[in-house]
Structures are given as C-alpha cells and as structure tokens.
Length: 476
Image 1 (cartoon, rainbow, N blue to C red):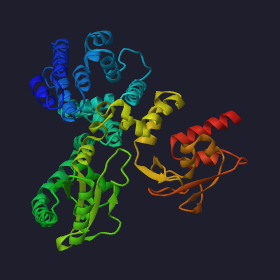
Image 2 (image 1 turned 135 degrees about the vertical axis):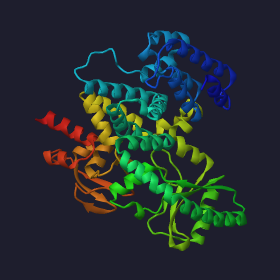
Image 3 (image 1 turned 90 degrees about the vertical axis):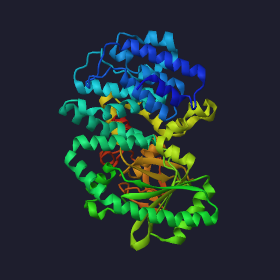
Image 4 (image 1 turned 180 degrees about the vertical axis):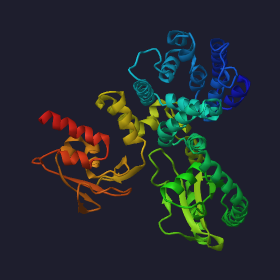
C-alpha cells in the first residue's frame, strides 16, 4: 500500500494544498524510517501509512493525517521535535509530542514508565482530542499485526488494549475501532472461547440471516407504504460482546437470541419515530427493552432508538433506528464532528464532554502517575450510570456510585456538608446504589460532621475519596 491510496481517499474531503503537505509528510517519514523493518519483516513505513489510512477513514483533518504519518519518527529515529516544528509547524509538533513515549528518561520500573507514558498521553488528549484518535488508530494497526509478536507480548498488549484503549474508544464513541480491538484482544487472551463462539455463530448465521431477511422485507413493505426512505440491514453481534454476555450474565450460547440486530437508517429524526411506530404496530414490543438515545444521547454522543420486539415465530428481535448523521457518530464518535471540523467557535464536542476537564482535574489531584492512571481506570473506564440533579442536569458517575459520589461530583463543599439524600423523592441511606435515570437531591447542613472513615468506605469514585482524604488530612 502506497501513499496514493491514502491521498485518493483523503481527496474526497481535503483540498489540494493540504494533500501536498500530506505527501511531504510521507516523504519525510519514509526517509526518517529508511532501513527500519517491523517484526513482520516489512518496511517500517507501512505502519504509519496504515495508521494514516485509518485516520482518513474517519475523515479527520489534514493535520491529523500528517501527524499519523510522523507519529513514530521522534520515538524511533534521530529526528527531533524541533525538526518536526520547523517542517510542519507547532501544532503538528504538539500532536507528535503527545504521541511520543518517554523512552529516554530513567524510571525506577517498567510500570512507572508505562504510567508516566499514559499520563503524558491523557494530558495531551485532554488538550487536543486528535492525539487520542491517532493513538487509537495506531493501536488498532498494532492489534491487526499482533501475530508477529511473541506470545508474552501478544497477551500483554491484548490485555492493555482491553483495559485502557477499548474503554477510551467507548468513552469517545468510536465503536468501529472499539469492536475490532475487543475481538482481536479476545482472540489472543482466550483463543479457545473466541474460536468456539465464532464457530457457533457461523453455524447459526445462515438460519438467522434467513429470518432477518424476512423481517426486513416486512418492514420495507410498510415503510414504502408510509413513504419513508430507509436503508435496512442485519448487523451481526461482535464475538466479544457475545462472550461478555455469556460471562457476565452466566448464559449459554443457545440462550443468547440477539446475535443479529436489524439496523434502520433514515433521513431525519421525524422518520426515526415514524419507523418506530411502524415496528411497534407490526410486532409487540418487549417490556423494558425500549431505549430512546435520541431524546437522551449517551455521554459519548451516541444517538439511536433501540427496541426489542416479539417478532415472527415469537422470536425476540432487536431493532436500532437512526439517521445517517447519527450512524456516522455511532461509528466514529467524537471524530465524526470534533471542534476542528465544526470550527473552534462552536465549542466542539470535547468541550461538551466533561470527560476532558475531569482528566485535567485528576492530573492536579493525583500524587503521581500511578495514582492518576488508577483513578482514570476507576472513574472513566468502568460502566457508567447517568443521574439527574433536581433541576434536570445530567451527571455521569461510575457504575455502583452512591449519593456521596454524586454530592462530591457537584462540589467538594456539598459533599463535606452532606447529612442525607433523596432519590426520586424518597430518603435513602448514603450507601444506596444509584441507577441510570434516578433524580438525586443531597440534603446538607453547616453542622454536618463532614467526612469520616466510613464515608471513605462507602464512596465509589476516586474523586469523592480524594476530596474526603484531603479534608481529613487537613483536620488531623
């Protein structure tokens, strides 16, 4: 694969002067990496080229493509950041710096070095989202070529990908990358289960596809009658999501029905709801299985209508309905329309996602890189619950959070003065587990005794635990 294919894809949305800069970056990187080979025996330049192509597939800007081509030159060659600055400008040098590991600094241990590298990457990411989009593209290509690594490296990289990079992709809504990385990681961490599920899915696929085709045909007929233009397709479940459902819900493969979902893409929001009405007229919806992520998008900007109906022959059938714009956001998340495309004056999606500000807050609060990374894993790489303040503001918290976590997320002083809490209008204990959709009201008093050792045990989020610990140290 040469630069021509990347340029051809990029030409669909990038203008000529910028395309020339991308070619210049490729020539620069090819010269810098000259003579270097990957573990596969291929010329090293093929890796940055593959990363640039993934970035172009997400339609990131020209500077992102340039930084993708140059992302390893400072780390792996004699080229300096100063040279990148001179040839490609300050912004490009900043992106490349954010992607460069701290290899030349002496650390006490491998773990300390790794945590410092993570901290550097996350801080750069909070300042410019393009850093992490390129890093995810880099990790995806490394996963695709994992077979050339030693067995020990394969397991280490696969585990790290599941623990750090898949959750980041999920938080940013970049599901196209997340799903592929999860499946590859499972293949190396638990090959027996991976191939077992893959084979079972292959055997069931033929009969499922026949069923889905008949359902799609019935829906298409009705949509045509209503004059709704739509693109309908069957979407197979990813192997990792089936594996997760089997392990977390303790189910056998034959107990999992939604191996194929139907995805319907329409032109506008009005058609989304009209289509939902048609689906619910054709088949009975299953109670508790309808989710409206259009009216209430996920924190990673994902929007779609989800419903599960009792389809023909009494089979549960999952249906997702969204617009083309929502579909692009579902695949590429924040990369689909981040600030540099919308224009800085728009505020950009990353300004609306509290994730970025909270990363910078954690950096100030953490004692060292290890505590920073652990806090990130605890607060941001877990499943989330979304709860409301009495005024209707949405607050996101780690799964398992309690009213104390909510109080400290609002403000440290609110947390310190907490004497009780109401959830959905009823008084609850401070260790009550919050669920998505709960309306939480914190009862405070100036005469509260403040944080205690018991509170530290109750709180789930690192944010709450750190605030309480600071107050206790101050008063000790």
